[in-house]
Length: 297
Image 1 (cartoon, rainbow, N blue to C red):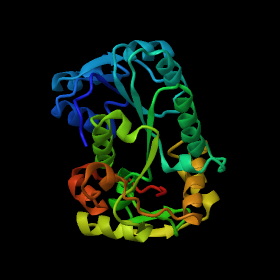
Image 2 (image 1 turned 90 degrees about the vertical axis):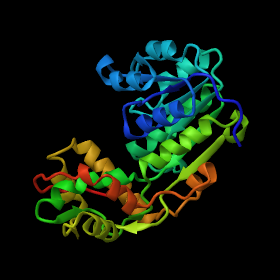
Image 3 (image 1 turned 45 degrees about the horizontal axis):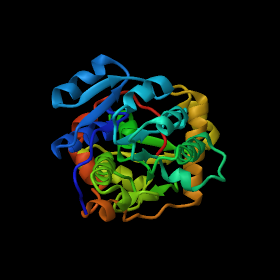
Image 4 (image 1 turned 90 degrees about the horizontal axis):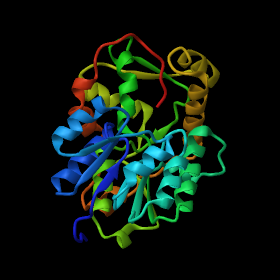
């Protein structure tokens, strides 16, 4: 169900995979968009496409308050600050009728003490406390995580993982953007107060993920398990150790608590979610040669 088009929608994370597509979808629907960017340079392409751009920072309440002035709805990307500055600005924003939050399935597990989980738990709590009607989009693992496997794909063909039993329904970031666009152009009362789980259409094991990449890209790839501590040590060569340790913890949790396929994409958009194979096919050019590496799922 779609009502009259909303007034200006603020999109944070507007230069990212989800935010960028969301901006395009809203503009194509005739919705005025204000895109929050970190620098004027990042906003040039968005401005050329027809979006109003404002420079600001998700950690800065003052810049967020300015960005929210005159906005009717907003799309919030949670960062390390867990949305606290945004919630503070939103609570004082006049005319703001809805905040659609890109959260995660992790928010449904507040009992798990992992920084990647707690960021989303805290973020949802902050937005609830703002008093503005909210919708939480809770996707699982993104299909774009496969890009971390590109070096192995062009190297020794081996992806070393800490939890070989991990099996998740990877979601195409484009589907998340399409869901957000549908929510933001529906009457506020249609989705307000709902947490919407989102996933891809099929659960894939890590070997299954590797098989899809092999089939679509024509390069052999296989998965090899290593102990978690060894994986953290090796991965910390490429990313900060706390992040590597947290990521390993996320994979351990979902290995022990396998996520199921969610109908959320279909429920909101009226069409099936895209498959992982479709995502790989459409992003084949993004897989460029590189040295072997060690990554998780």
